[in-house]
Every structure is written in C-alpha cells, then in structure tokens.
Length: 124
Length: 313
Image (cartoon, rainbow over all chains, first blue to last red; front, top):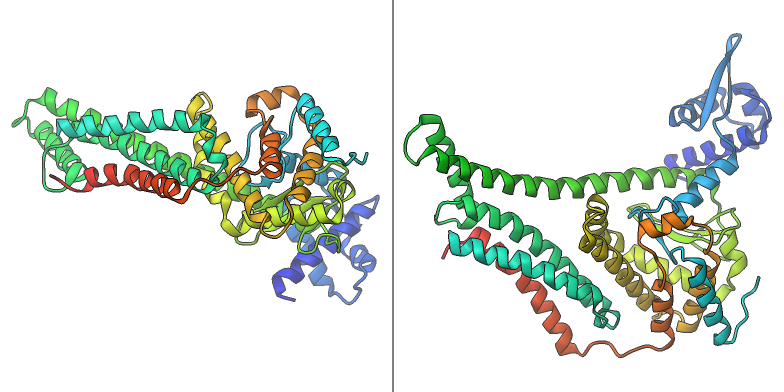
C-alpha cells in the first residue's frame, strides 16, 4: 500500500473510533481502541492532529492531555454526501455526474407506469 | 475595420439564433456526439465574435487582423490622449471605451470559467475526502464505492482520481444486471471526461441565471452528455437493463427535492423519460454525410472569427 493510501486508511479507522465513542478520547485511548494496536503513539497523534485541522475532529484540553471527539456524527457526513449527490441545492453542480436526476412526483408516476408497461413491476 | 465589425457582430448574432434553434431541435437525440460538438463550436464562436466585434470597433487597420489592430488602436489612443495631439481626444476616448469593453467581456468570460473550475475542484476534493472516511467497497458493484444511505443515488466524481458511487438504496433497488448497466454508464462518463465538456456550459448557466439561452444550453448539453454515456453503455449491456435501471432510480428520486428547488434548477422532468424512450425505441443515427456536415459547420463557426481576429485581408 502506498503511504497516501495508508494515511487514508488510518484516518478512516481513527474516525470510526471517534464516531463509536460517546465521550472525548485521549490519544492513548484512541490507540487502544484501534484494531491495529501496533501503531506508535506519535502516529495516532499525527493523524488526530490532521483530522482536527481538516475539521473532522475537535479537541479540548484535559489537564496535560488533549481529548478528541468527532466534529459531527457519521450520519451528518453521510447526509452531506447524499445532499451533494442528489443535487438538492437546486443548481446543477458540475462537480458530480448523477445517473438519473431528480424528477417531480408527476414525472415519477409516468416513469412507474412506463416500468410496468415494460412488463416488470417495481419492487417496493 | 467597419465591415469587420459587421461580420463579427453577424456571427455573434447568428450563433445566438443557432443556439436557440439547436436547443429545441430533436435531431441531436439521434447523434448526441455531433450535436455536442456543434454546441461547443457555437459557444466558442459566440465568445470570440462578441469580443472581436467590440475590438474591431476600436481597432485601426493593420497587418495583424482585429487583435493586432485593437492593440495598436489602444496604443494610438493612449498616446494621443497623453500628448494631447493627433486624433481628436473625443475620438481617442471613444476608441478606448470600446476596447475596454471588449477586454472586460473577454476577462469576464475567462473569469467565469476559472471560478467555476475552482469551485468544482474544491467541491470534488471535499466529496472525495468524505468518501474516503465513509464509503466502502461491495462485491455486488466491483470498482465502485458504496455509501450507506437508503435513498437511491448513483453518480461519479470525475477527475484524475475518479470514483463511482452507489448508495445502499440503489443496491436494494436494482438487480445485478441493472447495476452493471449503471456502472457501464458511469464509467463512460469518467473515461470520456464528459465533465470537461459540461463545465463551460454549467459555468455560463450559473453565472448568468437570468440569461435563458445560457441555462437552456446547459440543460440541453447535460442531457446530450447523458445520452452519449447511455450509448457507450449499450456497447456492453442490453438496452432494457439500462432503461429499467433509469426508470427505477428516476422514480425513486421523486419527492426528495423541494418543489422550489426543482423550478429554480430547471426541471429534469421528461429527461429520464426521453432517455428511456431513446433506449427502448432507438432511432437510426444521423446518416454519415449529415454528421460530416454538422462537423464542418462546427469547424467553420470557429474558423471564421479566429481568422478575422488573427489575419488581415
């Protein structure tokens, strides 16, 4: 695996730990909850720092240590992805290309009837 | 330079009329590739001719066409304005004004394109980061990423590090043959970089939302690009699978968007239906000689303003 991919995998694994936790975690606690326990303390710290800089994690002082938590829960980010993907902001962004664009209810009814006339019932 | 002004203005006006006619024409559905080429030529020709007509108005006759004439015209006007002799100052001011208008229009068009490209890159980067944190692979859709969300979505994130994304809702909605058709469609988009074709039209449409023709051009080219990807997908998958996939995903997307957003964004109504109709009752492509004629028209549209801008007669 290339270093970039490895970093991506680490960020993802650490975000999973933060999302699954109900309370802010120290670097050490995050390291203990990772499946790959062989990671150096400094590596976990670096990745948490990167996540904080990107805005995905928030950190706060707790005595001499930092505690980290996810900036928003997993569902909020999934929603952001889907809103962008379904193009609900009203403008057709050129950033993504959707397979089928959103349609109105009346149009959907037309599509459903067309589907039935092809001889396949929609599987609801 | 006055005849040149008229010719360039006529080209600019002609491209507008041509675009209006092309937007309501039906033959593009039969050969979307040729039609897209014509749209691109119309857009480029309009920009060059509009900028060129203003430039020609302020240009002095010379050996280097309108572009060279405009530069020496600006130099002469500035010199005479600064020194207070030569051509009357009012004349020099008028010449400078039209040349400035020409330069401003050119700068505006370039700026709109650059700003839109930058916005697209930023949005895609954010999207890719989120995908790297949230999406996962699935054996049902090899090569694609799956996002766990019940709504049906299937799309691609174009770019050097492109991605195809399928939502969990789509995985439930479509059978394996339909999923393969969707993947073939998205791969066609990515391979041919359709996003680059669409970018200038989307940039103009969003920069000038009040300009109906600019928005119409964007909507039309967006639909043609989808048809092009449909055609490419048909090389690998049967039409029926792609059609039922389109109908299922299209029908399931309804009601998600607020009505206002639909109206503002230019409705996608009838787009899905048009694509399905095209798949199920295919019409013959345009004859080769007609396609050649379309390509020649496109070449001519660009060649005329470029020649007038660069060469003198």
